[in-house]
Amino acid sequence: MLVLSRKKNESIIINSDIVLTVIEIRGDKVRLGIVAPKDVPVHREEVYEAIHGVKAQSVEVKADDEPRT
View 1 (cartoon, rainbow, N blue to C red):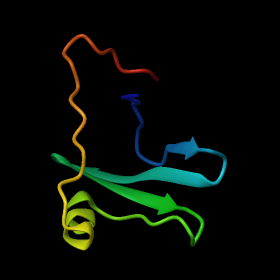
View 2: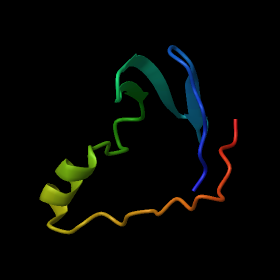
View 3: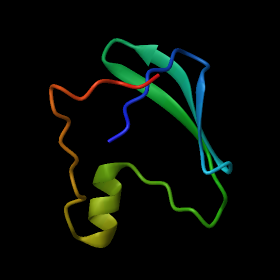
């Protein structure tokens, strides 16, 4: 898993056509804005699981994994 640090109003670009932007950080919640092509489905994990009837594959972060910035 790639772990990145971002501040409010900073973005991450995926494959040159998906942009994730940190909109707001309030306590332990982070609001993200996502711009993606219409043919790319974007769902919260619990919605994905409800749609597909399966548990989404979890990724475990090890303590020795260092965040990349």
